[in-house]
Image 1 (cartoon, rainbow, N blue to C red):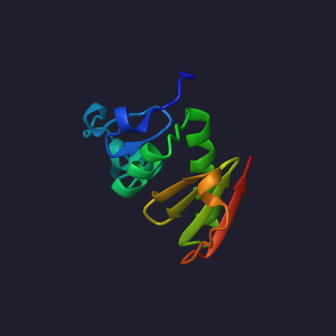
Image 2 (image 1 turned 90 degrees about the vertical axis):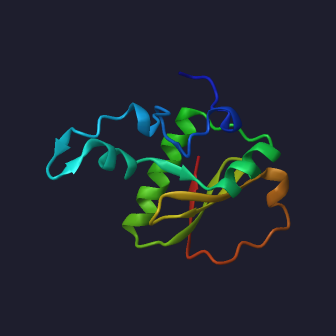
Length: 127
């Protein structure tokens, strides 16, 4: 599973390390009052339609390892009480709504140059 995730081809509304779609989840599995689907959705990284368009336009492909790092960055931001965070990953920038675990927009390295990021309350830099 080291192939890059081509967002335009695989996008199902939710992209996580295993690229599970809601239809593949068993809604009847109950774990401490929550079903498996709800628990998994709380861990997934969601992508807004705008973010998906930007990823496609800019030719950004996310690999499973990168998605894992993004998930960890969101967890770190949430632990500090962040609401809207800039996540910097090598030559990519993502604006994420932490509460919804949703990537709102994405930029590649060339799009980041001379850019001002507004309406964020935190930044997470990951390698």
